[in-house]
Image 1 (cartoon, one colour):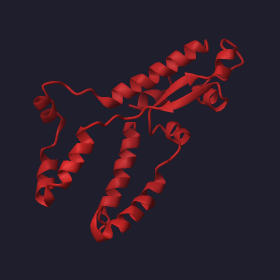
Image 2 (cartoon, helix red, strand yellow; image 1 turned 180 degrees about the vertical axis):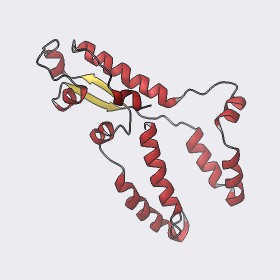
Image 3 (cartoon, helix red, strand yellow; image 1 turned 135 degrees about the horizontal axis):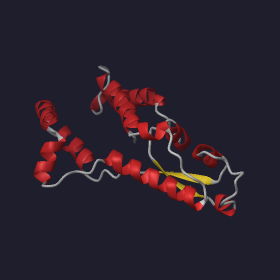
Image 4 (cartoon, helix red, strand yellow; image 1 turned 90 degrees about the vertical axis):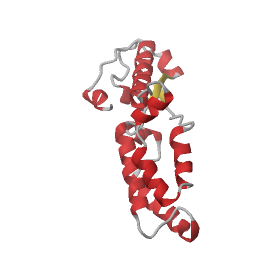
Length: 172
């Protein structure tokens, strides 16, 4: 997710968790699942919309159709129109959360209410990096770079120029 996508996700999840009539476990778990479904209708569930609305990062690849026309000056001139015309395909960049957030959520759920509040107050990147003994990579910058690099490479393979737009700089 981009910062914009993560903000939408977090806002929707907070709305679910803030609903007084739901609980993620126990007798009200069904209500929780229903509330999740209601709230997350506002979150797009297809790659095209996620990409167009800049909610997620994607890699770009030239298609066989695109490569067969490489250098043709009549090709569409924007990455959007190249994707729509089938000259370029997209693939989402998947966030590989192997431990920190998922495990933290599991551990936090086992702490009880007081432990959960204490855990949330003490969780921060600086403390994590100090304990780790190394800086943590900014995943948004990493994924934005991967997206930009794949777009540039794709356009080079199609023998087209990549001209960044104002939207590209706002994505971070």
